[in-house]
Length: 118
Image (cartoon, rainbow, N blue to C red; front, side, top):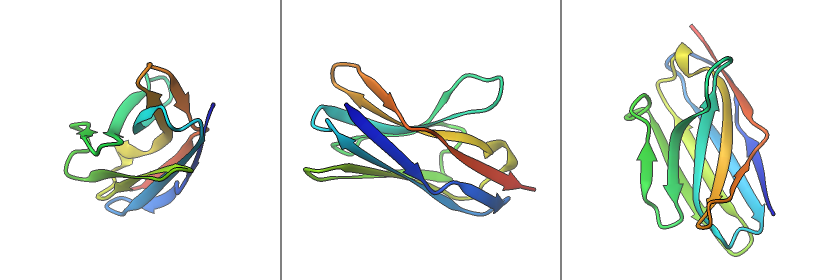
């Protein structure tokens, strides 16, 4: 079983920056992709960015050029960061860390709130 612990959400002014962190522990050997999703009230959860353990990145068009994702892996855990620059009010919502295995199993963090004031 994979445990995901997120941190780094909070309140920021429009145009500001935040970094979200996610630590994966437990059965991490089979994880091949880590990512960040977000879900606004009444909307479906959407991919923001993901990255494979070999470093291949996938960034949503809506955040391309403003958000970056990075990963660090060792024997005990995997860390993934989402650096968010140039935040806009429409970026404000709950962000979720996700881990996926090659077998297609998905694990989710508890979510962290990002609030952007205009």
